[in-house]
Image (cartoon, rainbow, N blue to C red; front, side, top):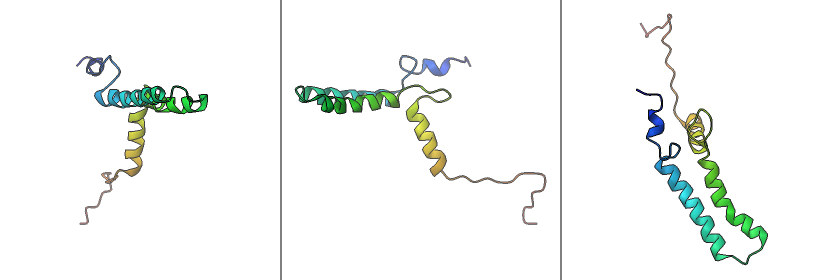
Length: 96
């Protein structure tokens, strides 16, 4: 299997469908807020840009992971997932 086969399944070589959905929602909310409150002050305009910026940060690529969103999911699953370690060394005693 070629080394670059995973990238060929991604949209534009970087994004999955959930990534584009998250980014689309963030940008849409930002655009709607900016259009609704065009005459608002600078502080509100900065606050209105936060959803798009946050969505952009979530889909930003990170080394060894797909993106920041996948890194957060992996950290969450590590700390909340059930872990069971079975000893299979040379001194295992199966209760006999």
